[in-house]
Image (cartoon, rainbow, N blue to C red; front, side, top):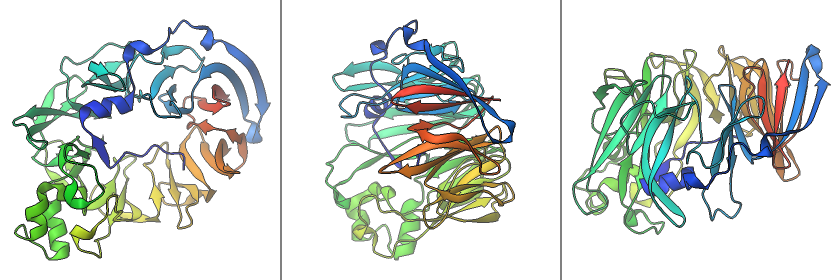
Length: 427
């Protein structure tokens, strides 16, 4: 599937920034001739649609559409160096060249979260996060050890070391608005990610130690979805008949938050829990609905769970009261422009509308997003998935021949072919 999942774990901040990018001084000059268009052509598509195809010399191996801009990624196949990111406009002009920012640029109302590298060495970097605009200016004065921003609100995490051990931190998570005003401090225990730091990394439960690292997952319809470490031990204990006096808890302590569940629920902008912590995974509300994944209690004792144990069940859509509206999917996305992609029990993808009606049949091997009445889809060709766009009648508008493709928005989609960016202007 062509979809960038949020990882269930993040490493400590220094590794997190390394994963986002690399040395911000290592990028190229945005005035390079890589912006030049090499080939420009048009092709007629079903329904009177015309697609203008602009092939560029801009290298990339991944691309997303973010408010009409193309957010590019380039990864060293050996993974010996950190991924690099760039941003281009629909004419192929480079807004931010590779190396300008260490993290992928994803716009929300023209703003994006990115890292500020404060220290680096060979193969690693560390730093802090802040909020930036399209001029590259930092738009709030403060920085955070981690920051998540979505639809006008974000949560900044400030971490203060209070001891020498891997768990001896004081984490403060604060809700902020787009101007950087701090709205309120989140209740203790709310997190987006469980981070792994310290200890050794053998895949045995008792050898892991954990810290908590993150924020809320996203804002929509007046609600923030949150991942909580608070109560996970209690939830798992209840499922297993354990107590905090049980040997497994005495030996492992808070690392139990790596396992079990449920993890996710929703709070309002005053920090009140509106939809309880009852889901294994969740997404931000969009168009009145949110995709949530059922939690399936483990059928073995907690201390027998293996690393990466998946306790997630089917995905359903709920409304802002927490009522299930429809569902039963093996994967599901947030709604975008009236549509969401979903998968059936065979792992095949298609699209539904906000009533749950199937618009694009679940016959594809991948999907990514919808916009301008077009849907990104992918199909295996040999041992790799190639991508294209179809319309509401499932007619192929852009052939499934690209190594990657974004959703369509503002009349443009971005694709990758032979390692170079292709701009698709749809009229």
